[in-house]
Image 1 (cartoon, protein in one colour):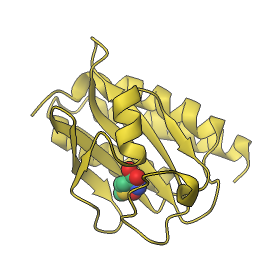
Image 2 (spheres, helix red, strand yellow):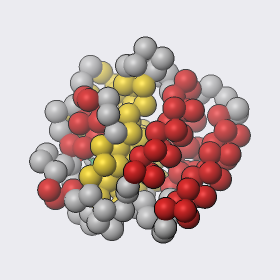
Image 3 (tube, protein in one colour):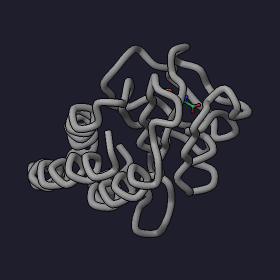
Image 4 (cartoon, protein in one colour):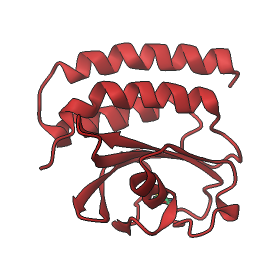
Length: 159
Ligand code: SME
């Protein structure tokens, strides 16, 4: 996909997600629909979903689309842990070169993880997309997914 095609797909996704967000305030329901909408909009994503912070320093798999995934990821591990720990989006062009990458799907080649923060800046969850293509995610994905996550963040309250 070209960057222009990505932008257009994300623009449509934003409109769709704005409609979903209006539906209700249940965080699991919101994450489920957002994961489905993002997965459908991003054809190069092989796995799209959320890991929620369920205890201090611990992520647990939440609503997702794609193959069965690892359940628990401590903040010290993986790309998801790095995003949760730092509060910064992680774009990984080659997961094999990422120290501590958690390989839930051996066919995964690249990954992007965006932290979902509450109004106080505390990380409540992360949105993770994997791809079977190397370097599938770039600054367009980062910018657009950060925008998207910012819109849904108020819904992602602790369960
Ligand atoms: N690869 C991730 C783990 C989650 S799965 O990809 C679904 C990581 O290193 O954090």
